[in-house]
Image 1: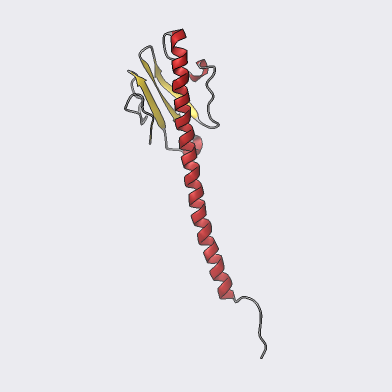
Image 2 (image 1 turned 60 degrees about the horizontal axis):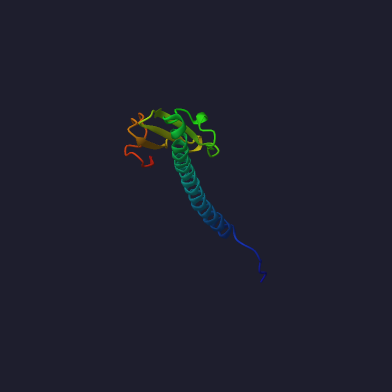
Length: 129
């Protein structure tokens, strides 16, 4: 009797299916980690913006209405910071990232009004949706 050494077609198909399932699971974990990293970069940029606004205030007696006015402020790559309102009583801003579409982080400091659609409602607290 002649014995063959190797794998049957069924065995190979089972291995391919198992590898496909593992790849699908690994991919979902990767995208979740990427989304968390983008969210943290938006939150970090808003914290840095708050620090820069406090440094800007004593010289101007008002908060900066534009990110360009804060010369030492560095945004993370891809993060878009928008200062929605700023005056001598407070300011409000939001952060977005094009790779994390549909999600926004916001912050309100002082008596600034919240922007339409911005998630921040409590002064001093960074909130993301």
